[in-house]
Amino acid sequence: MSGTSMDAVDSALLRFDGDTAQLAATLEYPVTDSLRDELGALCQPGDDEINRLGRLDLQLGELFAHAALALLEHAAVDPGEVSAIGSHGQTVRHEPPVDGVAGFTLQIGDPNTIAERTGITTVADFRRRDMACGGQGAPLVPAFHAQVFAAPGVDRAIVNIGGIANATVLQGEQLLAGFDTGPGNTLLDQWYSRHREGRFDRDGAWSAQGEVRQDLLQALLGEPYFARSGPRSTGRELFNLPWLERHLAGLPAAPPVDVQATLAELTAVSIARALQGAAAPPDEVYICGGGAHNGDLLGRLRAQLPASAVADTQKLGIHPDWVEAATFAWLARRRLQGLCGNAAVVTGAAGPRVLGAVYPA
Image (tube, rainbow, N blue to C red; front, side, top):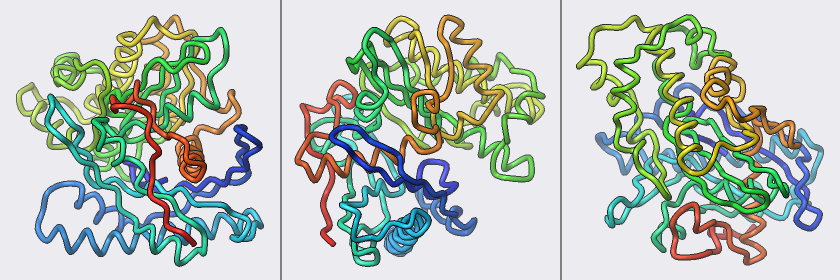
């Protein structure tokens, strides 16, 4: 899994006993600064896109193959023991359908290269089949969340705070809804990198020093995406620094640290409102993704959800850093079994579909 933040390749090795998944080993594989910059540039329109896309597709295929093999070496597992690699790929463009206008999504990281270099059957391209039957193609994690985190008699929400945040709403063992809530870490990371040393605000230490600017917060919350209901997904195509700068331009100047605090509040408020709009506040909220390590952000989320107990998914048996990577191992297994991988109630698809294309070893 290489997510919106593009900070690393997250690799997870899963063992299955029936429908029970056990996390056997994990590894974070580095992405160079130069590759991250090239990928970030490709996420926005620019010159020579097809050539850049083709080169990066191959380069990422090699990178993902190295990451998978490094994980297996770390776990002392022979590649011949592995049934399949589930590769999400790197999203470089996600334009979901809106108001009846067809959308598209594109993830790169050549699966032919992964299968060839590793000698392991590879499953990839998980999102486009869902889109082909009218779905958003995202988020895909709620079906996995329901499989591994649902419990009878308990209303839970699972919130993945990556670059973009998404939420899964569970009523007992029933999957009620799932959706992207809006920006997670992406604006926080981009603003931090512009004004400070480093790629992210560790533990939210900088945002905790600032004051929330209510004029800016209300302007940002005026984005029409936040008013949408039902199946919805988004990405860096909408929530990026130019989007933030357009709002800043119409307001009195604010210190950068106050902008950072306001962006943290935006993430917390948009998550809380989305959960409250989908159902009554859940009894329990479990966080995964990089945002699980941001103490300031979690404090803001707890303040917005006073009736809910907020913890991370380690309490449910999977460390928050590895839930998304585990999802795509599970989805690869579903594909090989011929079982559906999407949840139509989440994506808005016409119905259940088997997701992913298979590239044999």
